Length: 260
Image 1 (cartoon, rainbow, N blue to C red):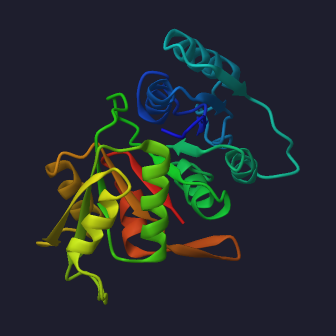
Image 2 (spheres, rainbow, N blue to C red; image 1 turned 180 degrees about the vertical axis):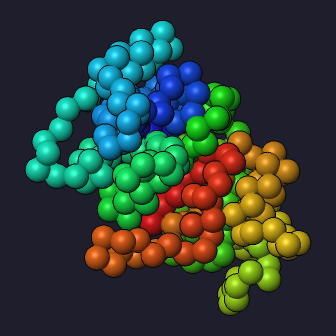
């Protein structure tokens, strides 16, 4: 693995050291011998009863990282000249990869910050379900493949940073036109030259949403993570997401790496 520096955004209201994005980030850092930077602040300052001590939360995360043998830097303060999402993106630009959750509550939610990170950090982002409680393990990755530049970028990021043993290419047919002059054999063969076993699956929606289909098929193939290109653009700071990207963020079932 080429990953040496990992950034995780840990909102004080939702962060838990032993599971979810933080637990995943600690186990990922341990697996690849990377240093971890944790940014912890309260983001829901308007809802009564939601105020949480960021210093205390950060201390618990630091203790968990130390117990796992992971070198950890804790950040709990920031200049209010910028919004929290902008500060998070600035920090993320310095690291190999970022890890974040997808909670949707509050005026500024984790999901909103995740969307901003995808398009403004310039780095890949791993979105992790809040309830995810399994440590990172290197093995097989499910690759949402639609032959687009974003998908190619996500594949390159995943192979370079994670060094998977196998990639299961997953193409959902019938969801959108997928014009291509490449055959599946070329896709698998060239990926093999990068030292990664690969295979390709064409799957149908069968009444599922695109996000559910991709995640379910990735799990069925034995993947521990989904990889996909992030689609969307910013319009006056409001993000217009592609259908698959939006659907994944609404219901993240497995850790998902997104690159834009």
